[in-house]
Length: 187
Image (tube, rainbow, N blue to C red; front, top):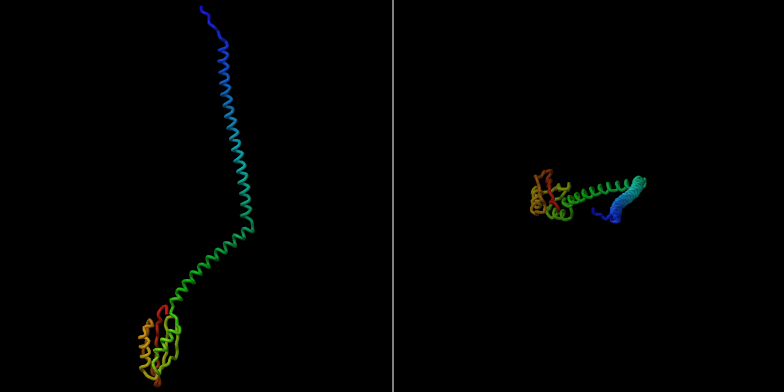
């Protein structure tokens, strides 16, 4: 039989190497576990601190929002905004009215000058009234032709929108006529 060499050193080194590999794996596992625990703990601590900070901020905001002075300011601002809206509405209405007023006919010196330039001889205006659109002239004359002549003269100026005349009344050799003049818009 052949003798075998029994080398115990090799066997010992092999066993030691396996033991070291096993202990390294265990140490690696423990190290990874500890690192994971530390990371989770740090993250949890950060979340806890963030939560505390947010709760504190939330409480400060709640105190600010429920402060009576702030609530009064908000109420005042809301009231002023409503008033501003109302004023803007009124401004739009006023601008609209101004546009209408600008388009309304005006009874001024130019219009009266045109009327007086058209008055025939021995004719007088007894009454003049203006309702914003129509100018009503009540005339008196000593000649029956004059009221009609007055209306014709007014029509011939082309200054007025419309001139209406429906005849005269005779009372004791006096001839009374009523002439209605529609004013042009913007004049």
